[in-house]
Amino acid sequence: MRVDAVLGLQWGDEGKGKVVDLLAAGYPVVARFQGGPNAGHTLYHAGKKVVLHQVPSGIFHPEVLCVIGEGVVLDPEVFWKEVEGLWALGIVPEERLVLSEGLHLILPVHRWVEAVSQEGEKIGTTRRGIGPAYADRYARRGLPLRAIESPSFERQVLGLTAYHAARFPDQPPPEIPEDFWRGVELLRRLPRVRLAEWLPQFSTVLAEGSQGTMLDIFAGTYPYVTASHTTIAGVLAGLMVPPQAIRTVIGITKAYATRVGEGPFPTELDGDLAAWLQEKGGERGSTTGRLRRCGWLDLVALRYAIQINGVTAVALTKADVLCGLPEVRARVGGPDSAPIYESLPGWESLEDSRFEGFVAFLEEALQVPIWGISTGPARADWRERLPLPTS
Ligand code: GDP
Image 1 (cartoon, rainbow, N blue to C red):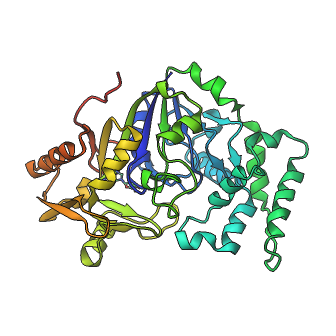
Image 2 (spheres, rainbow, N blue to C red):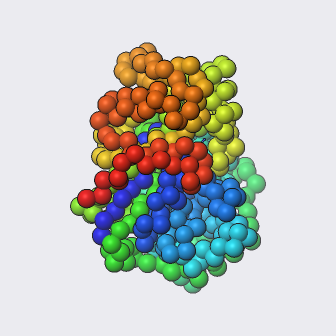
């Protein structure tokens, strides 16, 4: 079994979903390995925009099995709604989904805890209950997916709900909506596997990352991070694969930088240019609708992300957004408080030789081949520069 991974090298929203969708057809399996419905992977299916939160981005390929891995936290209620949305598009995801029996469940109370504690507000989380669900997992009181097989499952859900409700006695108690139970029923009908036994039957697996390296719980800008490992470490743990199985590590970066939520962002822009990037790049969170903070590309952060993930190929996205700027900058050094920039001539179009100059500059600065360029949001908006290194 060989595993190729698609990882975000920035603060998320790099366009991973699109790249996974583009590559998926070449793999028997596409697998999410971490995170939860804080992910919002935007793709286009039959001309329609679809945002996937928990279902892997390979779902539009009938021959591809989509795995939700051990490292994920899954919200049955959100899952139910997402599957309903896919039915409306004529997709029957149940035929293509396989779940790791040890992934953990997000209960309605996890979202409630985030709302009443207001813990996530300082950090700017998506308030989907992901942090509290991982916290319960690590506190060893969470509910793994396999718990749905137990006759006492409902009692366990109510028990954990009561446990958290007791921490906030002044708050109106959390409710468990009908869609949560619908989602649980749906999960009961889906194949659940021991991933370590099941996955190695396949020759190749495409691992789909969520969020980005700079939001990794260890490697990111703590405490302004997500609750899981978004890096290559998350692939190993979340899919239970050995390091020797990792073949290609594809890092995705935009041609500029964005960040949703709070936390350090050394190359952040403000004023007209930031507003122009937000507008032209559609920089609004696909899960939360929040405007994303925008800035210049940060090569210091990118080099770090490439190093810790062992990235072997880079895909560059959204360079089309920068078309028409007279000058484009990239941070090449300096401390976070005083970044040093290199200024490069801007480009009118992605056919422009000045754009090729920018790509050559990036390759030199990053010391990793730029494998492909995404030239727009659709699957067809793609230019492969080199063969993907898969040997
Ligand atoms: P992900 O979470 O990494 O999959 O990224 P998101 O879906 O949150 O955000 C990426 C956004 O950029 C989506 O709206 C994509 O449709 C869009 N997108 C991806 N690649 C490109 C590109 O090369 N150019 C443009 N203009 N948009 C892109």
